[in-house]
Length: 239
Picture 1 (cartoon, rainbow, N blue to C red):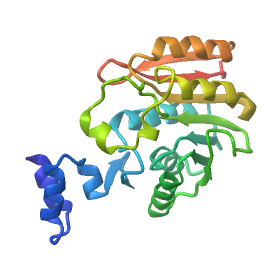
Picture 2 (cartoon, rainbow, N blue to C red):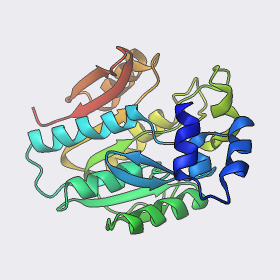
Picture 3 (cartoon, rainbow, N blue to C red):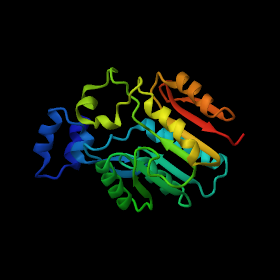
Picture 4 (cartoon, rainbow, N blue to C red):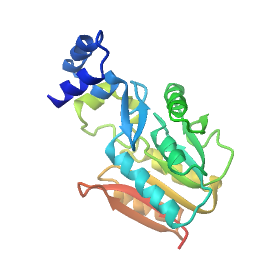
């Protein structure tokens, strides 16, 4: 019932019944309305990008706290797999002195992210890139909510049907993108850095081990979401 009230409130009068039909057919409410609230910012979404979730808001919150903790006054930030741009936009708005670059392999996703940056008046450099392929600079903050669902994992039918598979699934039991980021990012990091990742609930221990191999002299922290599930991995070398 709350969804119906929300749908009626945010639908144009001439679109309500068509939107209601879409909702009853199972389409996500966020795609029907066309936007979500993320960290207090209006983020447009469509079938080309994942719907931003609370867990990702928490990733941004914790990353911002680390940036402040280590006194990075002008952080150079790279958002990998930006999708809707919600992470990059939030960091830029919360830290106006930051220099933010956002990359995505999907040109269609980048169109959404660029539009969201315009709406929120956030100055961000967008690059169409398969991870670091077209990246030129070095950064002291790398943040990512990459595809991490294994091909054989069971996920909610509504997610599987409507959200972009390229942003959901990864090879090697969902670990492939993390492995590539770990391997490739060392050439794109400044001397001191923060790496921040959202991860699958069953991936924490193995990602800790993989991170230790690539970043042996760093602080590697596995943190839980509000439901107590492993959800975030942070790698820092400030201590």
